[in-house]
Length: 395
Image (cartoon, rainbow, N blue to C red; front, side, top):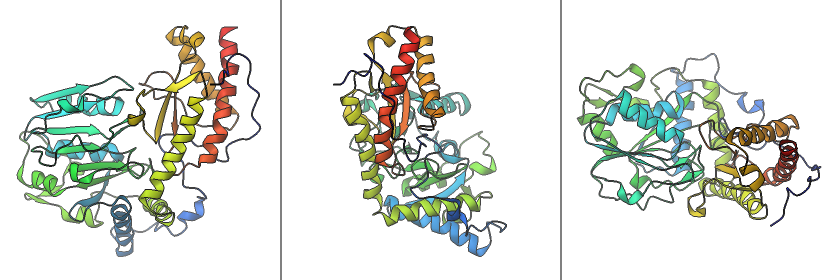
């Protein structure tokens, strides 16, 4: 392991070709330009025949690329991944007790909504600190279960779907927004899957994807929450029947045809490079480039100590240099922010600070739209910026 903190590291000569390492919205696919949107149906009604066909194309590509089972439904809904998760919770929860799993900020947000907004009576919270997973063996699948597949702000993911029984009684509602297209989602174990284009596809924000199993559709058509008003953008049924046209291109509200075109472009790219397995392999290669650097570097480590649970998309890191760890929390946070600001000013890396609710550190997006060569070019700059800012902090 190389000690990069004993003396100033040399300023690197090679800059990443693409400095966009944000965890949302994420980097565009390689080679993207505004020309990719040239054929977008702007100025047209989203209900016009060609526009509906383009929306349906986005739905069909989602099904193909994610390898969604034929009997599952795929729809585009309002308000990004957040809107998709809220639609599922407000429309389905309350039929039985619910287990809420949380180990980072977004999972914690779903807990708050279920407890304080939906105000369900029978809620059990299984919680773990940042960098850890709750004890999955304690989940009760006679109840509904809500969880994130990949903790975007902690860099911790569930290892697989083996912990979920095939004969579960309750529904599983999975926020998969930073896992889709990069990790192996076991749809046989998932009844509701949500994500947004702005993560693994590098798409634009504001629209969410909602994928429903036959069991989820049955819940929607047989369960009516008592004393719970549902705004229009949350309603998936009418007269006790699923609004099936939502899953065929007739969206609940107006979608941006620019965003639709951008998502189609990203998925066509994913298809062209070899589909889901190729997209996953690219994310794995990017995460490995980070892991190789961490292995040889003494001042940095993963927030998640278990390699089997580490995200290959939202890679979260913490400073472990003893002299920096000895500083108070405010000084550590100041140093980390200074590293982020220095790399931003150099045009090397944008938006790599840890999430505001997470422990102090860095978060680097390693999804498939990022090039491994850019990760490899980034890490020497992290060494350099850290050495510079540590020297200043301890002076």
